[in-house]
Image: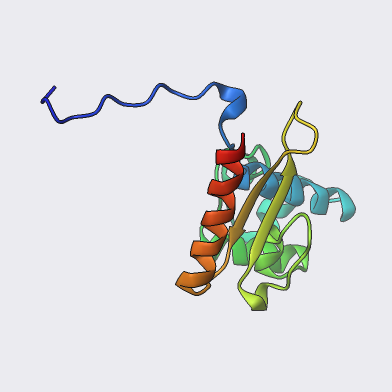
Length: 139
């Protein structure tokens, strides 16, 4: 290690790490749609032309489909392709280009994980970062 190199920070314990929940959220929505329509994974594979193995990996939250496969799934299930990635709290129309994920932190009442995917001005982004840093500093 060179003299100027900083050691890597210690890994965060699992309960402190934000989970990437997109795959599981996709799987949950896909399984709910299948149940609502009384369809099996095999039915969906036939309706979309996708392989049964691919459908299975989507339903288990192991993979996300390509945009083309997502369109085929949406067509077969009668939803818009963006349905699978809509916000779970504070639903925002996809036309606005904003997706929000707002989740309670397990075992920490009053704390949430917040993910916002939205284009904004640099000034607005800087204000949001300043709020987060101020909260961190107050701990």
